Image (cartoon, rainbow, N blue to C red; front, side):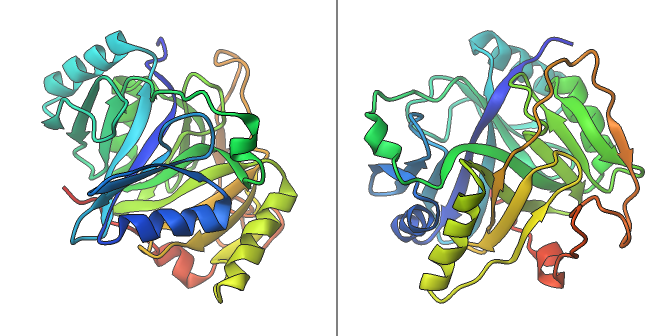
Length: 293
């Protein structure tokens, strides 16, 4: 199947305090604030106009997960497929400025996805991102009421490729055209578990931890190394209760036809979550942010 999704798009978060949320993410990771409006604040880790959008709302949650399509034709095709699949289509306009086209729909398994044309790139000097710990929005980790059904949906309708999974789909990892091991991951439940940024190096994961300590906070979990994806990881919780992962070294798959997805055992003695042997705290598994419509 031809790829329809090029790369990770954006995460749109509802919050009573967009500006404070954006400033906290900037303090922790070094992202730049690209736009402040009366009801929205956008941040980016690179030349893209938006990686994370904070929208004014009395509620706290995720409005949608954005996936950047190959082009307008891909958005049209996914719109057609969503209608034929009987999806609840929320809108055919993007939640984020400087995006030309989008389709936003609710999957039968809970997650709300917005497939959109490329986010506008800005002409910024290299110094604009100097000192940032992160360089791109890497992936989202979702929870679905039926992970196997979600697998069938995203591979069939969105053209995502399975990179790895656990035996009973307790976790699964999917990639798009850019070849990174996963743009979307999924497990059982409801909501979004975390969104992740790609760091420049291991030192930047330490920098995020230091920034947390300076504010009287601490990591939720890490530093460790995941099994699937083979990336180094750390996690913290932002002021909205969303889990943010800062990652380094995610595997890149260079040939879709030659890659064979792994089938990992998922239990307390496996090294799926951390090859180095640590176990996540109970609060890690319970940290879920709801989708809000």
